[in-house]
Image 1 (tube, rainbow, N blue to C red):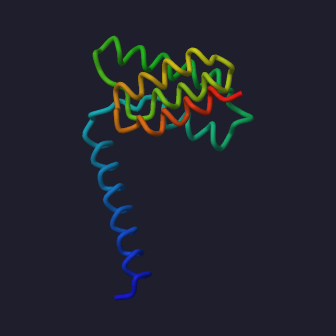
Image 2: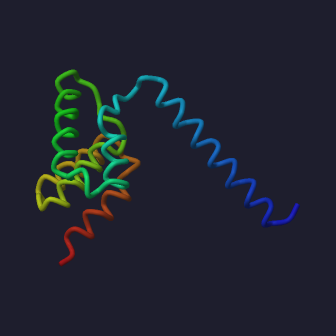
Image 3: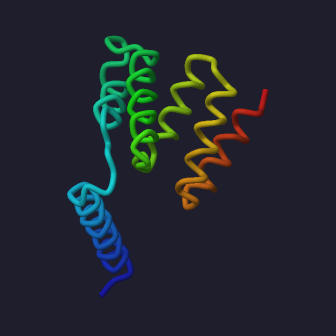
Length: 122
């Protein structure tokens, strides 16, 4: 087997495993995604039609509801909220959301620390 073919097979295996895990986590009911997925999608596709402030309000409300029910937000939810806070100029709130993401999901530490470093740059 050629090296290129072996790399392609490994990539396909990794992508397949990731999709399988994603599907399993979505079906398990482990997380409550609430408006997170739709909000992220609309921000990427319809940025003009949907204000980051509106999406952030929905996301913050959902995170508060989850907190009241002692449930953890889905992975990436605090990171998305932090990004939206940053977009609207609320740097302190952005940092709080990024730190919450790291606290809940330590595997995101390298990514979140990189975001925080970039935010600190002038």
